[in-house]
Image (cartoon, rainbow, N blue to C red; front, side, top):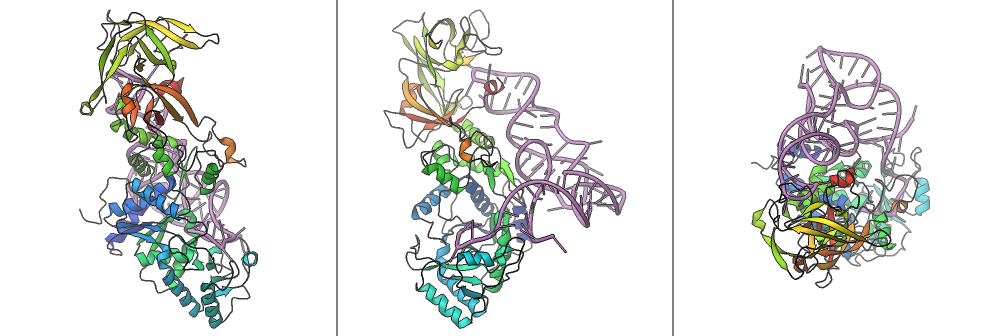
Amino acid sequence: MTSNEQSSTTPNNFLKTIIDEDLKSGKHSSVVTRFPPEPNGYLHIGHAKSICINFGLARDFGGRCHLRFDDTNPAKEEQEYIDSIKDSVRWLGFDWGEHLHYASDNFEQLFQWAIFLIHKGKAYVEDLNVEQIRAYRGTLTEPGTESPFRSRSIEENLDLFNRMRSGEFPDGTRVLRAKIDMASPNISLRDPVLYRILHTPHPHVGDAWKIYPMYDFAHGQTDAIEGITHSICTLEFESHKPLYEWFLDNLPVPARPRQYEFARLNLTYTVMSKRKLQELVQLGIVSGWDDPRLPTLVGIKRRGYTPGAVRNFCEQIGVGRSDSWIDVSLLEECVRAELNESAPRAMAVLRPVKFIIDNYPVDQAEELHAPNHPQKPEMGGRIIQFTREIWIDADDFMEVPSKGFYRLSVGGEVKLRFGYIIKCTGVIMNEQGAVMELHGEYDPASREGIHTADGRKVKGVIHWVSAHNAVTAEVRLFDRLFNVPNPDKGGIDYKEYLNPLSVVSIPAQLEASLASSDSETRYQFERMGYFRQDPKDSLPGKLVFNRIVTLRDVWSTNK
RNA sequence: AGGGGUAUAGCCAAACGGUAAGGCAACGGCCUCUGACGCCGUCAUCUCUUGGUUCGAAUCCAGGUACCCCUGCCA
């Protein structure tokens, strides 16, 4: 297999087509991409799409992908974010090798290139203030007006720009602008700002600079310096592309990268903008950036989603240029698909109701064997205890069973998973009509299979735990953070759509073997879903389990 | 007459003038000691729309329509 053949079985997309052609035509001999986050916040699932695209392309075509911090605005950036972003990229399973870069590594070169433009008469120092610049810029339908400072001499521009660098002027008093075209229909070409004065220390280069380049003046040149062949970004940067190319055309850059755009990810029932995410955290609506309900990568990780599932999700959704809304259920489906294969099974009763087996000896306890995975005997098994008193789930009992309900009711029988068939003979309720306790009998001959002594087949199989040795745990049931597909839609504040039941915490009864689990192991609680211990809050004596995702449940969705 | 983009099934998405891939969902059926998993089958006479070119159009041309992005000293 040669380097310019696609080595994966993943579906085709327009970026792969472009790279394939560039490699075949000899335009490039290898592929170099980059993932360029600004370290001003935590990464979310939308970034995961970009990471998978960039690192995935490099992997598929035998090239490399850089991790580059687009750190040109120290007012918003912090080391904490740099560290977290690195963690998240690694967690997703990607490796940038030697290629950890910072746009700020190139500040001196960028400065020299700015000087170069001034010498060519293609950049000037602007004295107008923010409001004036805005007014002079024109509107979407009207051309802008040239600044009175546009025609300054090269000498004066040089002098002023150097003095900007040396910190002589206060923030906001001057900027360096490119001299392009104030009448351009593309507003990003109306003499864009190249540098602004900012007396702010920088997380990566300290207090070396008093002026900082703008994104547009840094990105393409940094791509060129790093030898990026395909600079892949989201659609909103498309209108910046002519500017991106203008700098490459007018500066003595060492290479000629190309920018390509794809549609950003939108996910239903959540919000993705940094501003909204931050607001949810700050208002205490969620517990932090790693709240398991958030689409942040740290949140998803804490919830218990696996990196493989996220990667698979990114593969499934494809790459295109049309605005798309992906249903969260696809993400959940990817999580289920992976966990179904890897998760050991266990039993846990989330809404415990005591069931007393009247014909079972009070002091007796027997050991039953339960396999850890129905299709994978190599995953072994464990011993579960069977006793006179057991916990079963309140949802598995109905006083008056509805049509199609084949679990327990008075007079009905059901198979206890890996245990015996039991028959319910009585129910004790409180004054409010809530079920307090159930009574019944077991069939001693029914341990194997689902047939009664007289040969009938029991339809229902329910999970249970021995009340004798069950362990109590807090279980957090997570659901969608919002109760509408697009909380951003309409003029209404997105917070109006918050789902009040996005997390409900309940005391549950778990089988004894779970007491010694660790937070790395994801379990399937049979018939309920996938769960794992919360890595932050769960303690040996005080277990806390997160519900990662439910199992598909045709019964309850069709009810 | 601002500029730039995008329209293929419920949600994504492939197709590059040769007769609409695939995934998810949905719907039937089978299997099952998890109403899970798995398996089998069904699911666009049609590609936003109206015309045109062509033996042949989702693909080419012309005109409409809808939606998204752009007026930070953010990225």
